[in-house]
Length: 158
Image 1: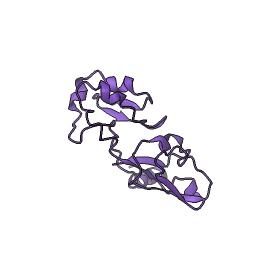
Image 2 (image 1 turned 120 degrees about the horizontal axis):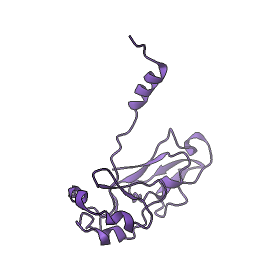
Image 3 (image 1 turned 45 degrees about the vertical axis):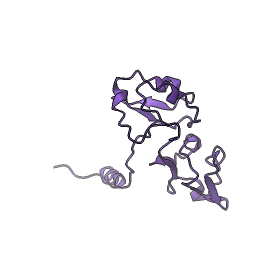
Image 4 (image 1 turned 90 degrees about the vertical axis):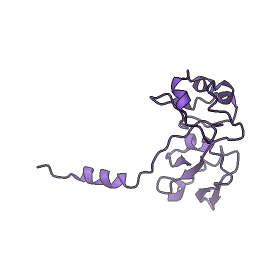
């Protein structure tokens, strides 16, 4: 008979608070896109991305990873997409950034403006020196704030 450990207990408790992580799809994807066509594609969108943020999963479906940069809206992935999954130049990204108050250094009285500085849309505002919030109606979901956040407190939500 095995006895439960504190690590197991707190690990299970932590899993209750984890958000579902849906992969962020590349820009310009039509809302009806299933990405099934990408499975037999050569993945030209990955090599065309000037910011190197487009990757493919095991099935060949493209997704965005904002750990090193954000999307510059350059249209290069749109131009090389052979199956035309990326075909809507008006449909930029399908999500916006959200700050975790538990992880954000500014929400814990440490002066940090790392997320605000790269935001070209002025979607991040501070209440005083601390407490940044992201205005969803201004945020394009470009992801530049994510790569610069020292505490990894920002995620894209759909």
